[in-house]
Image (tube, rainbow, N blue to C red; front, side, top):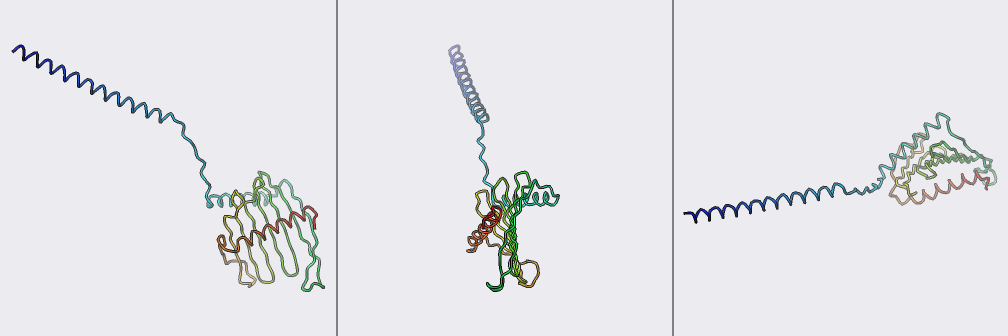
Length: 212
């Protein structure tokens, strides 16, 4: 009887020890998990700059344009430089008239500058305006008219200088304001328009520099 009692006590002690080991192992696992979590929490997060979408860029452009227009209406520009160049145009090459073409550069502060050109000819007129922020072109607006025909061209530029949207507005040559809108961003005519806009900008810069 005593022998059996010692056997039972031995078995109970054995199971008790196993239980303690299992409990200790579980606690150790929890400590490792907690430690790893703490390490993960202490790890600095690497911030990645989000790439701006075209839609977000266009929203910025509209805001900058609105800022410039507001400053312009208040007459609070920090200064404008304007020069005139005379050209000749007519229905026939032997019957031409003098026309004044203007180039203007304005600084509106806060990194905003505008380049403007007015080009006049025989029964036609064209106006080109270029908007910059921190010396980077973000928007170009070209409007022209000849007799009863009118058209507008809006070019929105990305931060890399490439056109991200090109909108054209025209009329039916009926003397009315342009109301027909076309998105020509992916058209074959985009490159031609970009080249044309660049040529007009060069012409304005030459007027301001007194170059022919």
